[in-house]
Length: 332
Ligand code: AMP
Ligand code: TRP
Image: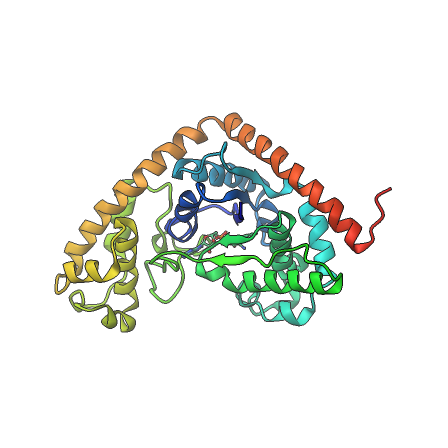
């Protein structure tokens, strides 16, 4: 069976983009793939985060996976740092990764900002650890949102570099899987910026833990332009905010975008926003309720992570033995 690996950073504020761009698609994949879904806590350390916040967010992402319908029996759910081979393989791959490849990563440039010299080595090496996450399990497919495409290309390049250097075909080249209409959910305050956990304005995103009132308020305040809703998809190119809201509607309703555009053509934003808010509240309300229930029993969540880590570690150890042998690390 082909194997899937994907992950989300436990950095708080899990939002609609994470759900539509990632988690929701993973639920569909459980039936046809051997799935490993990770909470990448080591990646979360690449930017400053409080220990208590990291612990809380790790449990929250786990709860979100389960609440959205990922079955911890069928899939492996675990947090990255519980399996030490991720960092071990990260080092080996780092030794094969030219700096020039890392210098091209746009996410590093965005996150490091202007003061490049003060950015951490971990932030720079982040895509190498991501490659290790995937290759450690010899995953063949990686479902992610569009923003991760470049990192995935790098994972493929690193796998190829390893295979060539050691004249082996040990690592499959992982395929990106980017699904659906809402591969890139944009900020509610600025249709040209992606919805993000780290945006300082909470009005920019719909959090998975927001209740119906919060969702309605954020959608009502969402930025729009003064014209009524367009009657053709082509008109959306010049109207990023309308494109984003209609895209979110289509994704949540599971309808093709042209149908949604046709239905709301010529209507004003306030009517449309009310319908969108109701739709979002219904779709996300179930998940938020289930997350709350799960978060009330952290011991239960920790047990899921422990069990998942045992299963992941068994695969990782076996593959690491082969990898060590291939590169000549003696394991007497
Ligand atoms: P992150 O929050 O960066 O750990 O991302 C976790 C997953 O959610 C990745 O697969 C991302 O591609 C996806 N994702 C994050 N933000 C968005 C967004 N605004 N739209 C669509 N997918 C997203
Ligand atoms: N970089 C990914 C993100 O920010 C998270 C991630 C880490 C990941 N390791 C991964 C995603 C491996 C897919 C596969 O969204």
